[in-house]
Image 1 (cartoon, rainbow, N blue to C red):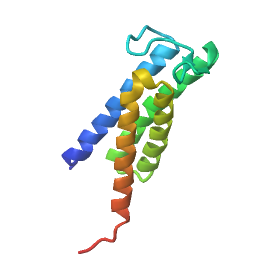
Image 2 (cartoon, helix red, strand yellow; image 1 turned 30 degrees about the vertical axis):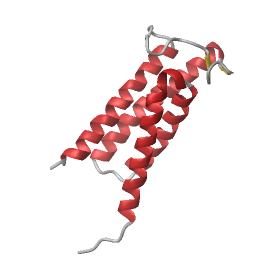
Image 3 (cartoon, rainbow, N blue to C red; image 1 turned 135 degrees about the horizontal axis):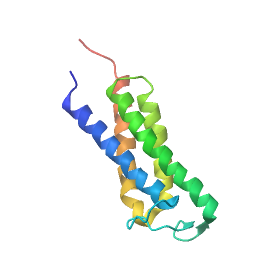
Length: 131
């Protein structure tokens, strides 16, 4: 039987992943997303991607969305590769949200919390077991 806390965490990861779909939709651009206005310059306008680069950037948002959902499924299924995938996708998410700091700063902060939780969980798993 699944414990409540892991299920809540996995649902949170799924929601975080679905929010990344907004970045994909906004920067492809498929639809106007008021929270993420289409642009081709990031880092406060200091890094110009151009239209094609912004499409590539949008694919990174899509990859992060899929990655969070897959990592959540792997974690709830207790597959051994769940935590490493979570760390990798969170690092990707950290980079893309940092590049788009103004509208996505909350995501950057959430990524920091996810990385801290993954590090804590990994540390706890390395502790010796006592009976």
